[in-house]
Image 1 (cartoon, rainbow, N blue to C red):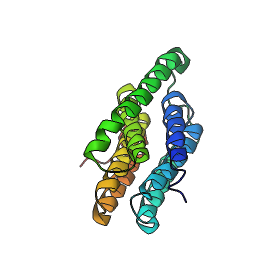
Image 2 (image 1 turned 180 degrees about the vertical axis):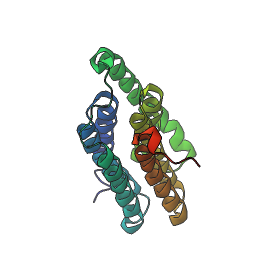
Image 3 (image 1 turned 60 degrees about the horizontal axis):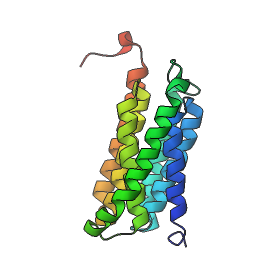
Image 4 (image 1 turned 45 degrees about the vertical axis):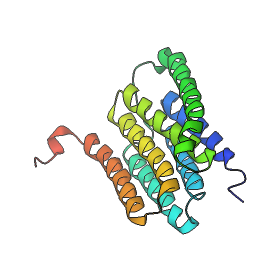
Length: 192
């Protein structure tokens, strides 16, 4: 049933990647991340079974919980983000255009549903853009998690490997732990 309306997951990804790029409040970003993780789960169920895909759902929500525990209600950038709002929205539109225009070419290489490619390309491009425009470590890590989510969606359509899925979830959770490390005071860190 979910495969018949998979385009809804892509629409949710368009909304969540735009919110992650434009919004400055962590509370709204964490809500967008939760919906993004659900959309990644939805798109991976098109290629894998639900028990295999649920690993991504649980791992993503654990990641959001870890990041949210260190930043319950934080304004991420103290600069005035409204000055760059138009530029960021224009770049988000370019990401949409790029993702939807290159997807048929990628579909000739990877024989899978177009919704999976749309979602993967949206996450790839949005993650790279978030990392490129980041001014602090939280936005950088959220961008890396978004980029890895795009890889997970595309990889799930090619191969059904529980080991690689577990490794990607481990990397995602490890990235969320980096926010805790970077959030501690420099004097509290132990030298390795």
